[in-house]
Length: 384
Length: 165
Ligand SMILES: Cc1ncc(COP(=O)(O)O)c(C=O)c1O
Figure (cartoon, rainbow over the protein chains, first blue to last red):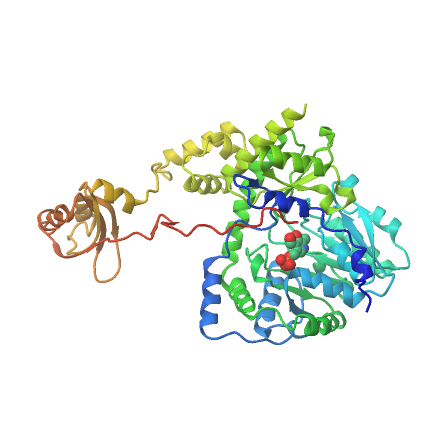
């Protein structure tokens, strides 16, 4: 027997933020701006429904694709909120978070050597999951274009092997929302060069200046995979529920993987999601408003503290340049944590193109944000 | 009400001590504008008073205070309906909140007193003696679970991971 492990796996570098875990664990009085989730717990109505469902004995598997009622609610919600049209039966399936959605979409689409273009800075899971699926991740640097994928730059790196492009808007880590005109230009390229667009819209509800879903553009449906879920909008990160919407040819294939690798998404989460979509959109709006106020406050304070920070139009992250400090993003984050006990995520966790930046999450108490900014300001002064 | 006014109220409702500067930064206006917005809401009595949510069980145990909820049935007056009687009752310093309600009773009062006797005395001497008050039902409050949307004695929050991508 060979003791060698998967070579593809070992080719993926370890997560850059592991060392931060060790530093943060067990330490008190740390202000964490390093989280990636809401500071709200799931609205009570949703939790209560889950408890009631559990009491009734909903403890079984569901259909592989998920409860039809849940998928029908999702379809209705997507139509109402984002003007999207899907057939609940054939064009949707539930996943264990968007994370699984990304994984099985890549595995359903890619053949060895197929290229997937990933805009950077970007969320951490796309690169490794493309690699694991046998594909080749190709980076599209957005840092020179206000972190918006530039269709001209995109066209330059398209090759005959280009299989798909990943979009994430609103973006983690930058908070950027891709404007409609850019989406349209990308749609034209997708048509011309025949590649898929995988659009991760997990932060769609958390937009502050309007939002267009890529999947809502005319004539894109048969080459578009919409990934979204309940984690961020409904403050349901721990429930592990997401969904894939796309043409039947794609969804039937992702479902084929899912039936073996996950069997189904958690049943309690599915019932909770029905309740969420039916009766809790108001709670989503309240949370959105609360993030909005904190965004305005925090961005102003960061700029005053000496960290140039553009106003993000979605999600709950700020993305600040630290280039003028002369430190790498990792040095900055580590020293800030050690000296001032403020945890942020160094840009380099989100790709090489994100070096020179740090990501802060403002889904935290206003007093904490205030104190964090004081500490960051003192830290930057101390560098000079 | 404008969007900014709503935002000001939501900030103040959550923290009555938030500074005008922080309000301004949060809603994206100048400090002068924020000041004006607050003044306007104060002047038109949308903001009535700045107060504090207190764990009353704690305070009352130490200061000796009890609270009761009193339902009151009244016969409305010909000319003024409930208003005249309501004003007489609401003025009483023991009365903390006073509502006109639907159902079996007409008024719901929340009343505070030094001890049970003081509240009993209020009911028998002040309240029941008012002409047109037909009957009352007094419920003493024994424990507070939630006050002004705040859970009292809430369990400690579970911690989130401090660093996540
Ligand atoms: C852009 C993006 N996509 C996907 C995920 C994963 O979400 P889920 O909880 O649905 O797996 C996250 C979580 O941080 C994210 O930021």
